[in-house]
Every structure is written in structure tokens, then in C-alpha cells.
Length: 158
Ligand SMILES: Nc1c(NC[C@H](O)[C@H](O)[C@H](O)CO)[nH]c(=O)[nH]c1=O
Ligand SMILES: CC(=O)[C@@H](O)COP(=O)(O)O
Image (tube, rainbow, N blue to C red; front, side, top):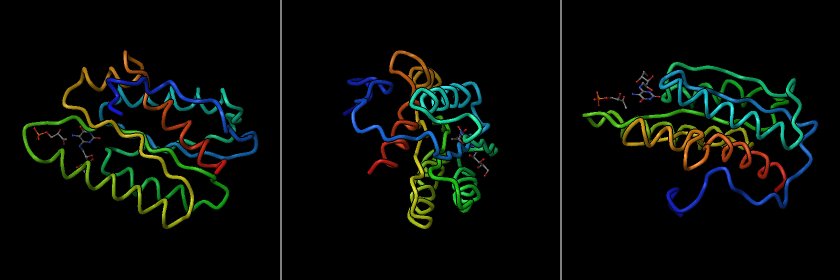
């Protein structure tokens, strides 16, 4: 369902496992930091709302979304990390650079999850412009950071 038809911060609270002892790593891209910091706030607030302990949430910053895959690998290989959340925002420009970054980070993050057999969540906005980004980072369409966090939580219960 397209985001315009749903709010990224609305989700079923059924099947929420106990995460009081679970450890999370959040990898955050510095590009478009006004957006990614809002995604981060949404993610950490959602994790703690559902019982995660602040001391069990580890943050790793990377320069851009392209580096999220390697950043995810660095934290996924830490044995007691239970789930990884990757947050970024790639805004379309004039060239095809956008396509290459989005493709690379989607495949890269997927491969890290498969390699380490733990949830590695794709919390990367890929908007056409800044407005679309802000609408999905605490704006009228909610916050993809919330969505990424609840996805990580639910995966730990499956
Ligand atoms: N234009 C955006 C970028 N570009 C930088 C790349 O992610 C990467 O850091 C660079 O190509 C060096 O490897 N990154 C974003 O996250 N968002 C953008 O809009
Ligand atoms: C997605 C990007 O890297 C973007 O900033 C590149 O913009 P452009 O394609 O206009 O160089």
C-alpha cells in the first residue's frame, strides 16, 4: 500500500514480543541529517515505548546511505546485537546517482541480514524531493523511523 494511503506510524500492536533484554543497533546516515535525525528520534522512541532499554540501543553514524550496508555489517557482527535498523534519506537529483545508491543500499542491507541471520531493517527514504522526505519523517505521513523500529521488534518475535 502506498504511503499516501497509510500512516507509517500506525501499526498493529498485536504480536509485540518482550524486548526488555534485546539489544539494537541503529545505523544513521549523516546525509540529509534533518531528515535522518527525525527518523532516528522516531525509531528510538518506538523501541523504548515498547520496552527496549536505552542502554541497549547502540548508534553508529555513517557519512551517506551508500555506507549503511558496511555500517550495518560492522554492528551485525557484534554477537549480542539482536537487530539492526538502518536509517537514511536519498533524495533524487539530476543524474542516475540516486538509482545506484538506492539499489546498492537495498541489496547491501538485505545481504547483511541474510549473512548474519538477524533482522537488518531498511529504514531508508527514497523521495523525489525534500518535502516528500519531511512528510515521511514526522510529517503528514508519519515517521518511517517508527515503522523501521516496529518492524525490527516484530521480527524478533517471529
Ligand atoms: N545524495 C545523497 C547521498 N550521497 C552520498 C552517498 O550516499 C555516498 O556517501 C557517496 O556516494 C560516497 O560513497 N547520500 C544520501 O544518503 N542521500 C543523498 O541524497
Ligand atoms: C542521490 C544523490 O547522490 C544526489 O545528491 C545526486 O544529485 P545529482 O544526481 O544531481 O548529482
